[in-house]
Image 1 (cartoon, one colour):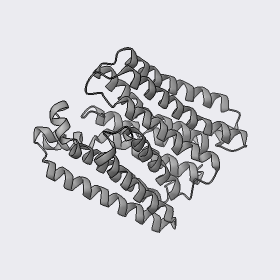
Image 2 (image 1 turned 135 degrees about the vertical axis):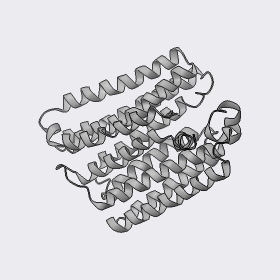
Image 3 (image 1 turned 90 degrees about the horizontal axis):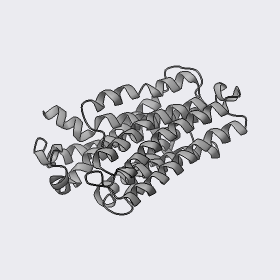
Image 4 (image 1 turned 90 degrees about the vertical axis):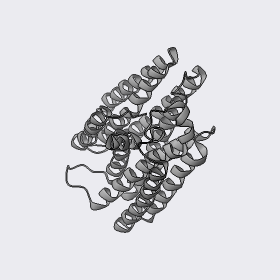
Length: 309
């Protein structure tokens, strides 16, 4: 029971999405083509990203304890299986560890930006959990956290090096802002207007991120797969993925019940890994895209044990 409670508190499946973002950012900026053992700095950046994500999940429940007692009494802290004090200690320890790991990655890569981004991500996570979550700025702060998570991997590889690469962290940040807004009232019946705005934000984020491959191809760059005249195929794949995500969101608008909204949110979160893999396909190689999409395995396995929302 205690182990399961910690897995629920950490929202274990979602950690695969944080790892996918850092990995994709690093691969794209390092222009990885050949499948080989990554540089050591990637492992430190991945560890930093996952630790900071875990800290955010734990502290989220710590600061939401009183609210969860009313709306989500089945959560690990309200049930008393894990004490608030213990959770707070673990959360802050993970936050500190993530910052230290980012500094190590900066030292190894000789890229001070990695440490600065790690510090910014630490501050953004704490600000979101402690102050911003219940305000109108909450979803935007969560989007900023996702943007910084992408930049953590990109900076470890010395990027972003090209202007179009900024579309990736910005677009994914917008996408996650939309997901967060969509999930805002998932414990009760959501407001249709909120769901509509959130869906439009997800659409804007997907469009912005998808524009990266188009810019890349028109400038004569990208993976061997993309430059072999497959831009249309890539765009079709991106559109199919986007439509599958947005269709679930629209179903939640039609029926804004908690079960329908949570299903849409869970699908949108899971799709982060697939979207990252498709972006890697446009810049690196089919082999690296497969490596990224394999992160779906721990996500799907973990989802059988604990909820992702």
